[in-house]
Length: 379
Image (cartoon, rainbow, N blue to C red; front, side, top):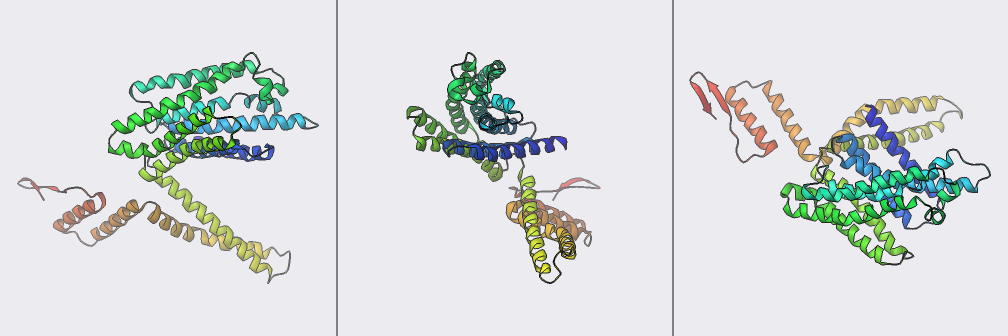
């Protein structure tokens, strides 16, 4: 319970920080595209981290998105503090975070590509993981040594780059950047050698990582001032968490469809109830004296009375469309359970049970073994 609340709180905090950075931004450039990719990573990573704690894909995706958001927010917050008459609270801490966390973004992206969907690299491809791990080590050591530099230096990339210890952080950027290409090749190899189920799991990630690798190569060969190329790179980065989410939804990789269907249900319920409340409040204020609390009370009671019936209807509607096969299976089981209360004939029960299994599981064949007084026989 506390773990889920902590993950949800952190994800919400990162979204708020991303929105806050947009108010700091002097101009809208390709960094906004990578910010969008980071927010997608945070949301997808938080969902997977809560649902599948034993799999590293969720925490790595959450780490990658959070790192870039902290990188942009920290630098922007420090710059605003330097321009203010009075220093902003914790400006130095956020400026220090903004000086090195960006390297963890590329490191996290390469590890996510390398570990999806099982949560760990396979075979000799584990060797590729040494690059991101070494990059993480150099980045953390460099970050510790950067503490103590003036805030003006931490907030300005041109002043920070020539400092003595920043090359350690820069090495983290380079290793994370370079590791994306072999990580993409590992996805290609797993796709070619994997079975039908694994191919279905990684085909969308393969398309996204291929796009990212091509965009990275083109971006590295082009002029840094070419914003169009880096917008393509930003969108390619955003395709990674989106493809993972699509794979999870389409192929039910971690049986996460139930939590998502419930989330959609409650979002719809809240939206409908908010609309009902506002309409009821507006209608009643036209007939009641201004300032009367009766309209607020009546609207609140109406919303409270509608909550449970509306929730049941919306949940049924969402599950019928979001997870049709499970909904149909539940309906079949409920009909069979109801028939058992009225019909206790053994032959009818056995045939009904075989019918339920055939309709819900769709096996190639189905049979029931029944023990009688003379031994065991098949039906």
